[in-house]
Image (cartoon, rainbow, N blue to C red; front, side, top):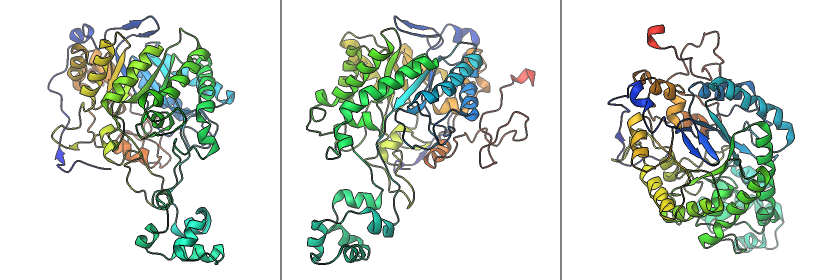
Length: 487
């Protein structure tokens, strides 16, 4: 993963924790109520992919255990991981692409309600993603994957040779020679793996996305409502389809790219289709980026515009992330797929304890504050979720008190300690396990391994309730919290 050149080492620490009385009177633990959106407290667990679904996208007992463990901490809301709306192979990632997934998702919503005592709202994040392939072996690329064209023949001066001879010649060229023969996308497919883009309108499926995606999202949303989720979060962030439509790199010429007024068109059409599917009184919001952090990408002023348009359309909440793009991802190993959190944009999404002078904490807080300010200036009171390196009560309370957010998201910190919310509420913050921001969890995610936290995954492996990861070396959920005087 990319790291700032300064590589300053930071250590997570909290100077003070509130008493139970202070927490009870805080903004963080106050309810949020809008006509369509209610939380018992303003704490939020953003979507994180734990790689616990079956290979066919089914809810497993490990999935249920994972989310029930977060629910035991009783945050205001949990957002279930990015869940695929298309019935296509995607590994151990949840899907909601057909009715056959309903029973498993209903078990999940029931488990979270039971574990939280009905205190935690449960949302599901709906995602679409385009095709991406692993970086191929060079021999396989030239033998099977590359389409030999007249351009290749001309550049090699092999117009009269058969195709196999051309492939063999290409396979024996040095890198510098290949750059004179292959096109940019062909070189990318060789060096990083093939990846579709929303601008590949020469492909019929990509050209048709404005027609195919709204009904797919709408059908998935209807299933989520039927399964008992409390609301929908549309995934418009990071490296995936809807974020790519919003990106300034989207220069489609069919009315869905170019100026930002056209780039926001499909995300709004998807939202309207979802709204028509679930009704006016069911919470629907989205997660999108405050800044793409890539060359020629969208920045904060684009995000302010998108936020205002989403609010104008009637979204019930807006959750902000940052970066996480394929555009600057590092070259993967042969046999691996590109991972959108390995470049600078990925660092800004998940900054680590080795950082620049700004440090790994709250890097998204001021951009989110600007976006919320733009919303309020435009006359909208849509709740805004701020997340990114937040681990202490004082950090969170300051964001709310300063009018910089309405809800505070704790992602890696809730993974480090799912009981953060109850410990702090009860005045027992000194018992919190603080995230180190080592990105141990991110390293597991990159390899599509079951995600755990280094603070607890080797603890009490022989406990009767410990379920071990597939490698047999780690537990899959944090041990139950036992208050110190009860130990």
